[in-house]
Length: 77
Image (cartoon, rainbow, N blue to C red; front, side, top):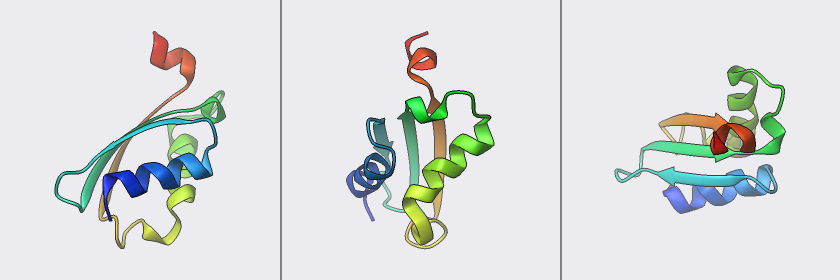
């Protein structure tokens, strides 16, 4: 698994999202996701939306994923 693949999976699952993923060791990743889909949702619900785009890869191919989830307004502030 690599950062580019994770980025593509998240973007496919959250159309219109801006996604940046880093993970130089290929196992532990950090992602910043900016999406309108997060509007009105608490952090846990936002993270679940992102995890849903990755499915069973979480805990398997992707050992750890640190998330920063923002609405476009939060990202611009």
